[in-house]
Image 1 (cartoon, rainbow, N blue to C red):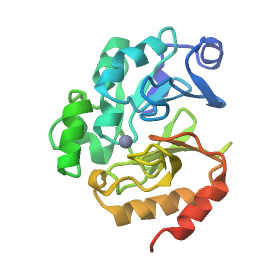
Image 2 (cartoon, rainbow, N blue to C red):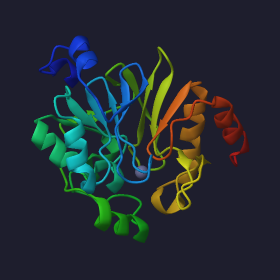
Image 3 (cartoon, rainbow, N blue to C red):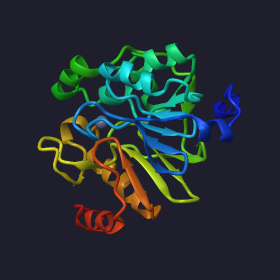
Image 4 (tube, rainbow, N blue to C red):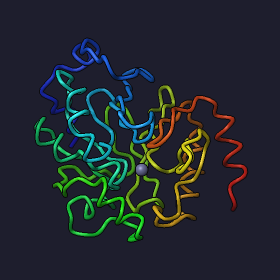
Length: 242
Ligand SMILES: [Zn+2]
C-alpha cells in the first residue's frame, strides 16, 4: 500500500503553492526545514508531502509551526535514533498522519526493543533527545517508493536504516550512513557516523559504498550541510578501509 496515495490533499498544485517561509528548497519538491540549533545539526526534510525524519523531542513545536498549512501525508524515518524520531509522536498525532519506519527499526520505534547499539552514548542521547515510542503504520522495505523516491536498505548504523533516492535527478537523502560535519567540532566534511552510535561499522561501510554506486548528484544528510560536490564522496569512499 502506498500511503502517499491516501493524502487528503490534491497533489502537485497544492504542494507547489503552499508558502514555506522558513524552509529551504534543495531540489524539486525537496525542502530542508529550519533548525533552531546550529544550522544542519539535526536535519529534517520534506519531500512532496512526506516529512523525512523528525529531529528531537525539543523540535516538535518548531517543526509543527513550519508545517502549518503545508500538505502532509506521513512521516518517514531513515532510522530510529533519538535525534531522528524525537518529534514523531507529536507531529503524527497533531497532523493525524501515519508513521513509516524501516522494518528493522520498528521494534525500537514502538518501544518493544531498545535503540541500538545499546551503548552509554545512545542511552544518554535518548534521555536528552528521544521522543516517546509510537506505533508504526507502514513498514519500509528495500524497493518501496515514497514521494517519488526509492527506499534503499542501508544497514549498519542501525539494522533497518534506509536512504531515499530519486532516480530522475539522483537526489539522495542519506540519513546517518555518512555525515557532512564533524560530530564534535561541527566542521563541515564527510565522516562516518561515530562508532558509539553505530551497530556495525563494517556493514555501514558496505552501505556507504552502495550509496556511492548509485552515482548520486546531491546528498542530503541527517547531520551537516547538503553536498553537491560528488568528487568529495568519491575521494571519501576511495579512502575507506576495506
Ligand atoms: Zn543522527
